[in-house]
Length: 290
Ligand code: CO
Image (cartoon, rainbow, N blue to C red; front, side, top):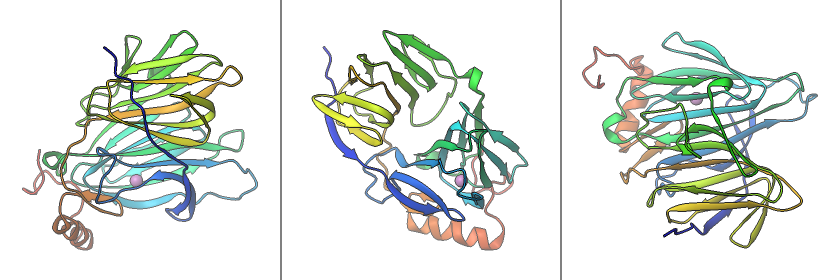
């Protein structure tokens, strides 16, 4: 028996300024109440005005206790970190970064040939037992993200499974689903999502029908509990969205800027570690787990 998830909320993303002055569309950010556990933040960076001038990006900043998932549609982001990693996240690519116990990095967006930059960053929480772990990256190039197709539905699968195709990002504590789904006009998409997991979609092109509600881009839809989601396109328009789901950790959280820990004491510790120059993961420091 299928229990299709009804809509819990529709969120219109709000413009916010982050980093060194970057205009973003934020659907939700970290809060103590943690309503979308295990998800903490979802930002859409879309710089569509080629005469807007230089984009200042996100100069060196720390992260502890979370994972950041960057998925690029157009343009790229140059990434550099305290482990010595340097690279570009380009169109159609994903970087699933597990900050673990501590990382310092820089994320600088660059326009594509069209003059545009378009992409998303999702923050996923880590459970207490992994907040002091070794940082890790899963970086997947565009051709290594598999595409599944069925009845007018095309899904690029980063994590999770659709139509028998499994995404390349593995071993993430939140057991995530993350995919970029396009529906041709007049199509329907149904996907099993485990009962109890948090699920949302971010509609960024076209329009969609969920239950009887017609929802235009750009909007986020949060689903209630159930064992599957069902999304349709209208006969006039395609629909394109990011779909994400994950298992809640049900732990208290203390979010503060780029850190999400379990207690305020751990936030104080992160701030004093930064001042003392001992923020970054160090396998010889017994506070960190191997
Ligand atoms: Co960052």
